[in-house]
Length: 151
View 1: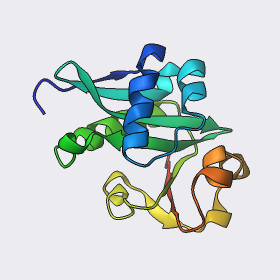
View 2: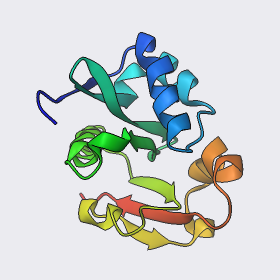
View 3: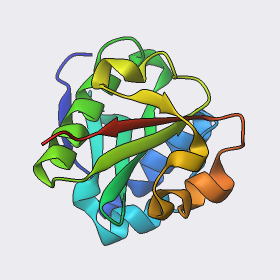
View 4: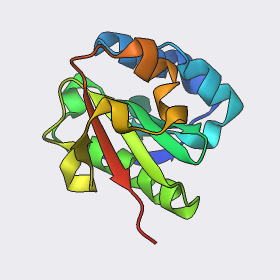
């Protein structure tokens, strides 16, 4: 993608991000609340004057949940997702979370490049297991993954 910029989201970006999520079959629940409460926890990829990707972290106690990683269909396999996830993980490291967790139904083979490994859902910290995504958003077939921070 030419002219790609990764930046923190603005509240005004939420409708475009939610449209991307819906178009990709991903849930939008809670996303607007994260963007309103902590826009620095959401990044967007902008190219050609449009938002072509987004990703967020949801803070849960001393950990974070990586969620809502989405790239518009024509931007997939171009490095857009990698750039967004790398940006958010650098922020997570800077903020010294104990770990970053995620659930995925389609990208279990993609996230290990960032240091994520599969874990049992029951092994995640309580604050993470209490998030909407863990309780309701992703079914039991979703793979849980963790990236624990080593200091």
